[in-house]
Structure formats: C-alpha cells, structure tokens
Length: 109
Image 1 (spheres, rainbow, N blue to C red):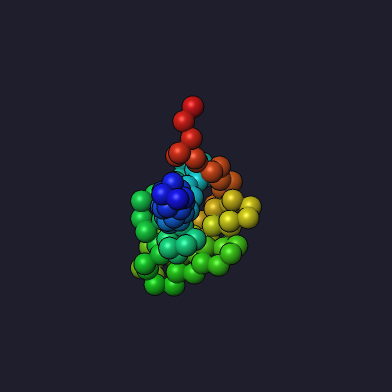
Image 2: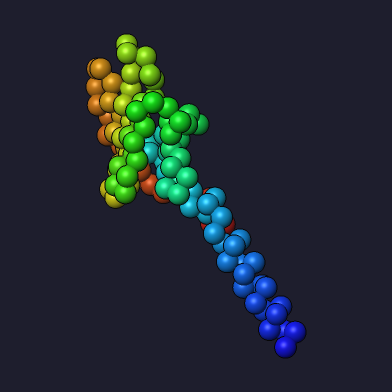
C-alpha cells in the first residue's frame, strides 16, 4: 500500500514539473536574426529585445506583431507567422521577408 503512495506522489511531481512554461519556449533563426516566443506567457523577443511588453503588441494563434522602435521616425514593424515560420521586418524604406528555422536548445548532438 505504501508503494502506491510513492507512485502517486511521483506522478503528481512529474506532472507539475512537466507543466513548466519554460518548456513552451520556441526559438527560431531567421537568417541570423534570433526570434523567441512563448504562447503561454505571451512573450515575444527579437535579437534580445522584448516586444511583448511594448505598446501595440499583438499575439494570436497565427501571428505575432510588435514594434521594434517606437519612435515615429525610425519605427520598425515586426511580424512573425507561426504557421509558415516567416519573419517580416517593415520600416519606412523597405520590407524584408525571412524564412525561419526552429532551434532546439534541448537537443544534444
């Protein structure tokens, strides 16, 4: 009977440990530009700059949108498509499209 209590406790611990939101982080390499997001925490970062805490941030099941520079002169709009894994950087002069490859930090070769 005691062994059942230990097994039950282990299962509960494993479930709680597995539900850590850090496991939901996704990281992409978009031709040298690093993109990181977490759907659960509504977190979005590009090249180490967090856009999810800035004004005009938007995230749904398909698209993440944010502004890299919030000044009206040098504003850069960043859009990441989670289905196609594409990054779009748009400023007043040009639009750049980059295909992205997911980086698996947990994978050991």
